[in-house]
Amino acid sequence: MRLKNNTVLITGGSSGVGLELAQRLIQLNNKVLICGSSLQKLERAKAQMPSIDYLACDLSQEEGPSQLFDWVKEKHAACNILVNNAAITHTLDFHATANILEVAKKEIQVNLMAPIALTKLFTPLIEQNPNPAVINITSGLVYSPRAAYPFYSATKAALHSFTQVLRIQSSKRSLEVIEILLPVVNTPWHKGNPPKIAIPVEKAVEGMLEGLRKGQTEIKVAGVKILYALSRVAPSFALKKINNLS
Image (cartoon, rainbow, N blue to C red; front, side, top):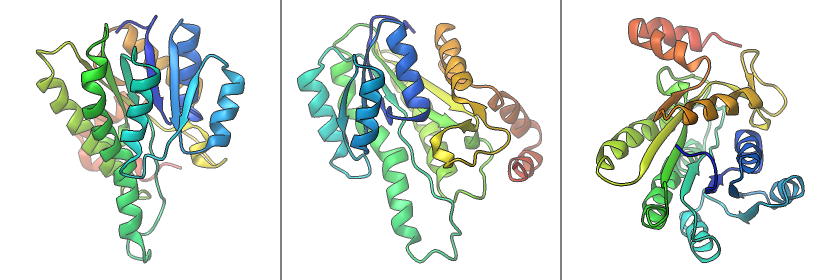
């Protein structure tokens, strides 16, 4: 994929991996757009990167994807790359949480339904522009789920499956469909208590960019390569191993 002279929309671009990716893409002479649910974080990102444009948008609401698309279509019709990066998770006990179905619906909406809706909305727009691409950010947990997260692994596994199908169905189109599978990354997502195996956000994004430079369409970053191999040859051991990590 061409890494320069694009107009890139990154959902969840105000912190963590999305913010670091935005910074790196700007350095490569791209126009970067970001969205997020926190106006304060978006304004802070704008202060760091004056060239970006942003929209405060809640993708947990069904109308969120349409609001985001309408803004991009009106203000940045040259957009040619969509990065579905926004995601949420909850560390909860399924049996002990009274409102667990509400939690599930919100997580499924942000992590799965929003990327699907955005892909449907944006495809006609980005295909009008040179080098159109959809990049979905998933996780190594698509191979072996972590029990602490009752829904996160499932939503990422579903997005992984959708991305594979979308790539096949897009094979005769100009649209490039890319998936980036991340390991545990040290971001604000962990609220100051990241697992010991978490890699720095800079290393995660460099792994992403390296895969993109090589033209890979399914990019396994860092330890995801090991987890994938392990899940193929010894799935029960991989599941046990991922749930014993601290």
